[in-house]
Amino acid sequence: MNEEKIRCDGIVKTYNKGRKNEFNALKGVSFVVKRGEFISITGQSGSGKSTLLNQISCLDTPTAGKIYIEGVDISRLDELGKAKLRSEKLGFVFQQFNLIKSMSSLENIALPMEFRGIPEGKRTKRAKELLNLVGIPDKANNLPTELSGGQQQRVAIARALANDPDIVLADEPTGNLDTKTGDMVMDLLRKLNREDGKTLILVTHEMHIAKIADKMMILRDGLIVSEPGLTKR
View 1 (cartoon, one colour):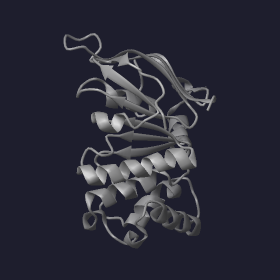
View 2 (cartoon, rainbow, N blue to C red):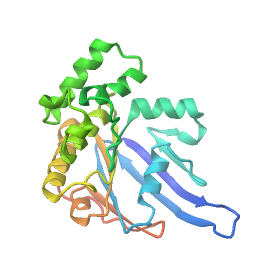
View 3 (tube, rainbow, N blue to C red):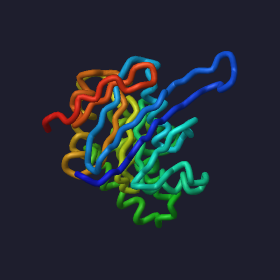
C-alpha cells in the first residue's frame, strides 16, 4: 500500500479567468492516493467535488498545480496521451450511467475494448465475465431502457472494468438510486477495492457512503477542510 497511484499538488481550477464573473472552483488542493486505497471526497453541492474528479480523470485541465498518475505528470501529455491513459489506467462510473441506449448490456460493456482494438471474441468473453461479476449475467441482451436503475449502474460498473483499469473513479454512483439499491452498488464497489485491489476514488454528497472509505476528504469552497485519515476496514 506504499505505492503512489495519484498525487495532486496545489490544484487550482478557475473558470472565466480574468472576467468579472471569475470563479475559483478549486483553490489549491493537495493529497496522495496510494495503491489499493479507497478514498471518498464529499462536501456540499458546489464545493468542487466533481470538478476535482474531472481534473484527475484528464477530462479537464487544472488552471495551476500538478497531477501525477503513477508518477506521470499528466499536464505533459497531449490529447492522444491522455486518451491512452484514460483507456488503459482509468475506469469511470457516473451518476447518470451514460449507457448507449441503442446498445445491449453486452455491447455497452464491450465498447471500451473495441476502442482498444481487442478482437470481438475476446471482447464478448470478457463482457460476459463482467456481467457475471456484477451479478446480472441474464441481462446481456437487454437494452438500458429494459433495466432498473440499479441494473444500469451495474452495467456501467462492468463497462468501467472492461479494460481492467488499476484506478476506478466514481462520481455520485448512488445519486439516482434508492437506498437499498445504492447500498448494493456500494457493496460491489467495496468488493472491487478489497478483493481485486482496485484503487477507488468516490465522489458523493452522502455522508454515510463517504464514511465507508479508507479515507474521507471533505471539500468546502474548493479547499480540503477535513482529512480524518485512515478508517478501519
